[in-house]
Length: 277
Image (tube, rainbow, N blue to C red):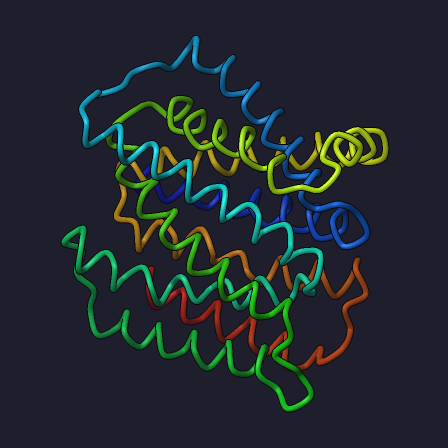
């Protein structure tokens, strides 16, 4: 088995765990301040790792890729926080899988990646799963769901930039370029930023540390996998842990409405991912 497949699988599991923790923590808290602290701790971790893993192919183009990655990360994190504050985990984690539709197209246009008829079938099955889980008659397209769609598009662009950045620099360097703009800009988007940041630290420090732990594992391994694997395949496997997120939302967060649609959509979407892998 290719090493990037194993790395991506572990990263996908960690991704589901930090999404679960994020939804649990941010639905009744200050999501923007929470994510600011997360980014600060993440920066600290990767500054330490930088001592052991540093390399960069510096050029104007590569620098623009790294700077662009940081700017897109600001938008992505902001939408991530609002999404988890307003939307059920089991719904958001299904809609986010739209990136599995976007990525093969972007990979084909900009990265020269090609996909087969089987992968087209996988895309179609994912759409059916999304329709079953997210677009039942009882569900309204509210602000939270719209934010999930926006986040899906932002994180798709982020994945492509991460692929290019991973070919440019070591993982700690990539993560530092992602973190620094967020730390500087996010407080400017917050009203009463200092008070909110202090309050969130006092009330959510344990959740922030656990969230940072799982997110760091996911991002480190995902970046390493993107360095050697095709972006559409890597992200497909990364997202294939959908069933875990849906079950966590149903069992522990008591998101029991439309449970049949959610489970059916999760299973169909997972089947579509298997066809893409």
